[in-house]
Every structure is written in C-alpha cells, then in structure tokens.
Amino acid sequence: MPELPEVETIKNELLPHIVGRQVTGVTLFWEGIVRQPSVKEFYSRLIGQRLTGLTRRGKYLIFSLSSGEVLIIHLKMTGSLLIGQDSSEPPKYTRAMIHLDKDINIFFRDPRKFGVMWLVEDASVVVGKLGPEPLEAGFTSQVLAQRLANRTAPIKALLSDQTFIAGIGNMYADEALFAARIHPLRPGGSLSPEEMEHLHQAIQQVLWSAIGNKGASVDTYFRPDGTLGTAHFQFQVAHRLGGKLCPACGTPIERIPIRNRGSYFCPKCQASTKGDSP
Ligand SMILES: [Zn+2]
Image (cartoon, rainbow, N blue to C red; front, side):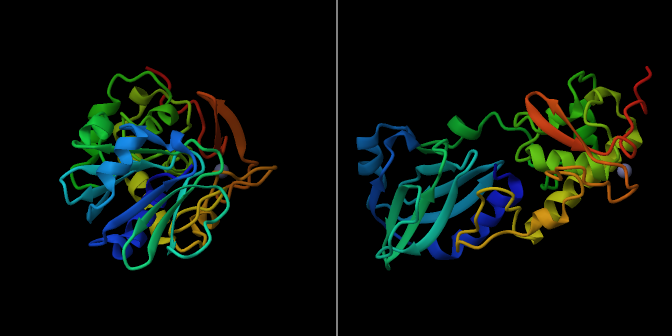
C-alpha cells in the first residue's frame, strides 16, 4: 500500500504537469471509485474546473479546484496515478481517467479496485480525523510523547493508526521501529523518554530517506511516469521474507501478526523485555 513517501512522491511529480490545467472530461470505467457525490454530480461538478494546486495529507492527495472545492484521492492498497497523453491507450487496470487540456491525462490505475475519489467543498469531511503530519515542524518528540502517554496498544499498531499519526503504514512503521530498536509489541506508553526521542528521529529519517528514493515499489506502486521507486532497496527489515538476516546483528528477521498485519523485526536488536517492567 502506498504510504506517506509514495503519496508525497506522486504529489511532487504530478504537480508540475497538472497545475493550471483545465478538466475537459472524466471517464469512469469503474463507478465504485467515486465515494461522494453521485457519479452524475461528480461529472458535472468536476468538468470545466481548473486544477489550482495539489497537496498531501497523510496518504490522501488533495487537488484544489477553481470553484474552491477539492478532489480527494486515496490510492488504498494498489492504486497509482499515471500521467500521460490524452490520446494514449489507458494502461491495464485503469479505473478512471481525468482528461485535462493540452493533451494531458491522469490515469487512475488500480488492480484491486479499493481506491477512492471524493469531490467535496471542505477537505475536513474526509481528512479531518487524521493525526499529526510526521514531517511537519509541529510534530516534535514532545508531541509524540504526549500522544503515547498511557497508551496500552502495541507501538506498531499505534504508528500505523492514521488517527494517531498520519501517513505511516506497515512498511515504514516496521522500519522506524527497527531504526529505534523498539519491539513492535511494546505498549505505546511503556517507552522511555530516550526511546521516544529515538523513535521520533527514526520516523522522520526513514520517511525522508524514502521520499529521497521516490517511494518503495514492493508491490504495485508506480511513480506518475510509470517508473519504480527504489526506497525498498534500503529496507532493513520490512518485507524481508524468507530467513533474511538482520543487517545489524545477523539474526534471522522474524514476522509476527499484529492487528492482522505482518510485522517484521529483529528479535535481538528489538528485544521485547526492555522497558516492559513498570
Ligand atoms: Zn538485529
């Protein structure tokens, strides 16, 4: 699933192609991709508008429109947005096309069909409940500490909870916890001040590094030009299946289910006992 670095890359790379462009048409091959409003209204309210900006909040892409409304896209498990010429053949699994002037087209490709679009007046209807942005200046280690205080849920589950912190999913939660040497099952509130400081640093470092590598193409993620990201080549534990060894100590990486998601960690570097006592 695309996480913050993948969605940030898509935003950065789509932006120069689409800002100032006018929506000349919309084609939906899968109408279920529009969550709100009705499909009929989606066509009539989107066509003719100019795209005035593109931002990211968590894993959501927010396109500003000349009417003041916003088009919000969530890529979910397998979505990607590809930029191309309007005259070109849509790639396989294209579920929607947003046609722009100057022969530009945004292809919403999504093999599993979980991706969603909303056209709303106020973005907060969709993104209002998200937790803080981990790369913004306001997200300090104190903010992380306050949010972790007294939390009994596993730290891995908290990091991938979008209302706790926005944009982090399975891959980058595993990478940040390994970088901070914290076991994924540790209760959030059990972290020492030093561990919280390390975790805060690790979160920002793994996310910035992955953005620098244009995201991780472990499954179906593509950059808007159709090329792959390379962030997964830097992964220390995430998605390292089949008896891969910890790059720090050589112990085989383990995978355990936490809230139905496979969590990868090093049982030696991320020992579970540390900090567990009251
Ligand atoms: Zn290790």
